Amino acid sequence: MENKNSQETGLKGRPVRRVVIAGGGTAGWMAAACISKILGKRLEIKLIESDEIGTVGVGEATIPSLINFHNLLEINEQEFMAATNATFKLGIGFEGWRDVGEDYIHSFGMTGTDHWTAGFQHFWRKGRERGLAGDYGDYCLELRAAQENRFAHLPRGGMNYAYHLDATAYARFLRAFSERFGVQRIEGKIVDVTTSALTGHIRSLTLDSGLDVEGDLFIDCTGFRALLIGQALGVEYEDWSQWLFNDSAAALQTMSVGDAVPYTRSIAHGFGWQWRIPLQHRVGNGMVFSSRHVDQDQAVQALVNNVEGEALTKPRVLRFTPGQRKQVWKGNCVAVGLASGFLEPIESTSIHLIQRSIVRLMQMFPSDGIAQSDIDEYNQQAATEVEHIRDFIILHYKVTNRADTLYWRQARDMTVPASLQHRIDLFRQTGRVFRVPNELFAENSWIQVMIGQGIMPLQHHQSADLMGDAELSHFLGSIKGAVDKTVSQLPSHQQYVQRYCAAPK
Image (tube, rainbow, N blue to C red; front, side, top):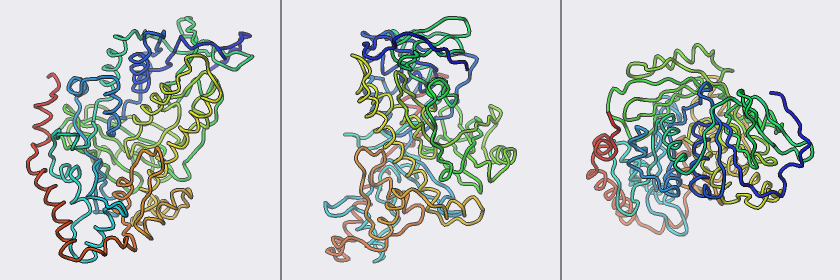
């Protein structure tokens, strides 16, 4: 793309009144929905997208934070779920990650009851040592409900959950929402970016129709192409493929052949992993793989051989580089979604990172002019947040007993970021986990994955030793009994979805 320089003085110090969103899809329309709902009366908001340019559209599994986003926008859950053929999600099932034939679930729930001196995992470990405890997941409501394919809304938010959704339908839903609050959609391809020679700020975007779209603040939602933040502004990309080997994904959709389960399935292969995401009307399938460890045709064939139901689409292959832009806000441009970076969807964080980018921008919205201090703080927060998520994803590969292929042996033997190695060592040696401030994944998520991947702490906190066998057995048994009782009273997930939010036929 050609870059045209303008001698205009730029936008620094000028109040932001015109917002231009470059690109639609999930990222673009989430940004449009939030900005228009909150600030639509004060802003002119335009979104540019082309029907000829497809969106990635495979981020169809979410985490519970999306509920908060919808609450901020006052979106009705039943209407949203019916419009997007959504189902409920209680966690992610990891099949064959710890070792071939060994499975576990990372759920959204809390496990057991903590003491102020020590987490529940210490009492559980003591119980395992004494032959008094079952599996760690036996003490988590959401995990047990997922195993039994049951779901219901419980009083006082007693069940933590997220959604599986049709990403294309979600973008349509948010488009209709945004247009009610004044967002103007402009059809067209961006062929030029005009910047100010004085400030380097973006002045306007030129479309293939010849139309120039001017703005004060530009949001880059152009996906992997990163037309604004990368091509026009030249922000460099930090490559994390030394830790995250996967650089490709093949996706296809199939007919449903059974009831939708309330969790995402993540199935390990010798060169990557496969997802299955059950919606009301179909199943989303994909294979995330490393092109250094398998031929693309072999990976696609492995996906085709391991789906259930009739294929509705042909496999579509995406190439990516795991990593993050060194700046996600530069000048008057903020990158959101794939334009800002990409982490494979193993923990369904893609939509969450879009949401966090938008919410952070709203909290720091430059109404009276763009300030470098805001830009610096935004970039620092974004970098810290995504590095924590990066470490959590790397954990799934580093901690494993698999040694059946070169892929898994290299993942197990790689040197990981010091921040992650410290967490692994701390838990392995002491059973302790401490949450970093503003971190997405709480202590129980780290514990579930580390135990699930095969780490049993070498010791437990002395608080657990204050309980005798009878007291510890009663303590553990009462938690498990309460979980079992609640799960037994829940309806099936399929029944609940049909009653609560069935999509129009």
